[in-house]
Length: 391
Image (cartoon, rainbow, N blue to C red; front, side, top):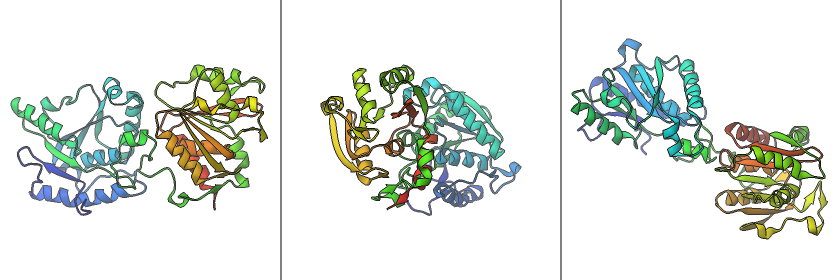
């Protein structure tokens, strides 16, 4: 893509998406280069962005913006800031839960998406209102006061259909403000689905730092107490009967859509005894650094795929990361047998897992720890790994 191309342009029906060259539109296109810088910046400026015009000078009266707005990200901010710059008033129409459920199973609730959007509106001092959207076009085809609508390349066609309906109803067509996609650091379109898959954060940055590529990460002594603190919900139970804690945990897990990741021989073996095969299991043939008796070892044949990796105690190796990546890329169960130790594996597992994954490991003498992968958990894991020594 040409780096000089502005991230949004206006398109009228019948002009095949070409930008109008009126003085106002020319100013809009030139101003767009500032948005390109914002879209590629590592962190977005959250200060109110009032644009080059005073409120009364903005070219449009009321701009419509529609979307799901799941895992509110840099691309969403680009859409809303474009509307803010161009219109005196912005209406944001948010897909309801029924429509969202048809798109993906793990989209945030309407209430949560509305809450995040309202926070953005308040922080930006936007003259904007939130509305629930229960059909594809919403009120746009018959809206009496709207004169603009924001679109991305894949929704531009729907905007032209809206305008056809408006003309049929005797209403003027909406000006279509076409906004280019925000990009990830890898150059892909930043999307909520990419974030839900666990590939990038809401700014489009990978969860793994470039400095870690093909390098071993060694835990430092300063992290010892931090990593001994359970990262998740602790289900207590006697050490001699691990099924007590795991049975309680299973009662509260939702595994209908998310993968189950089990770390540790006792945890994996107990799940199998309970009739539950983890989607991904990591074992090292030990419990509390003591080799297990053969009768207590996990049967590898319980899993569709098996990998062996070397990962010494106290470190996280590229081999472990690659094995985890391969396991998350398949829909069949996977077992990773670690020569060394898998105690630190949850840090890598969370960074590679899709949102909603359930990671379970044993806490010696206390029970089992359950942690659901979320953006916050990924951020904490990344923050901890930054403190590791890169060797």
